Picture 1 (tube, rainbow, N blue to C red):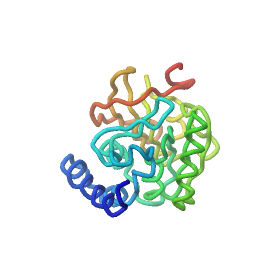
Picture 2 (cartoon, one colour; picture 1 turned 90 degrees about the vertical axis):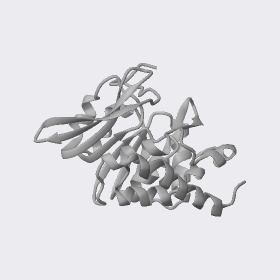
Picture 3 (cartoon, rainbow, N blue to C red; picture 1 turned 135 degrees about the horizontal axis):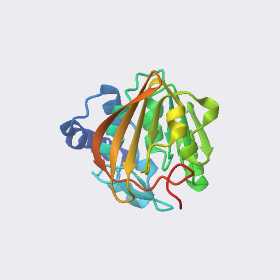
Picture 4 (cartoon, rainbow, N blue to C red; picture 1 turned 30 degrees about the vertical axis):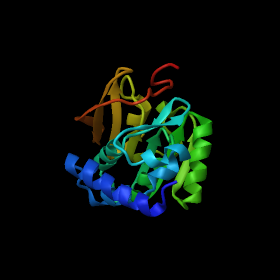
Length: 217
């Protein structure tokens, strides 16, 4: 097992070689990527690969996204520190930790209960206290705490799920991969007085967003 000291260097190297050269500039995002221990969110046998430039399996046919994609999606949310964020797809909890470092409150929804339970334990052990968890169909959002200043979806959708658009606050940002099952475009949607402005952030590939407003299993 590599020492924590080595992982600090690995995080620094990840930021300097994978994120900054690709245009990630937000100081808060870069600081969170430096601080959050990605190695704690993967299987122990994969900890040595945690800071490499690719996704990793986390079980249940799900993955932890490539560090750059995590940084890109987080930066696109434009978090300043006072936001309420909805995350669809808790997964390993790594993206959740990054969001919780940057926002006031994170509501995270995960369809696969076993993943949610595991992520909740890791995040609790790391002393995050601004996260609410729900095992549920993420394509329906989380109505109870709406509206959200930012919504992030970490699985590929066939189209924009209407409940998520409805749960977005005015001037809110939604970042979501949209496309077919094999490739998607990362889309940023900004809600402006009830209408939506779209921006394409580039190609990507995610696991499928399964649910009423997503793909069928």
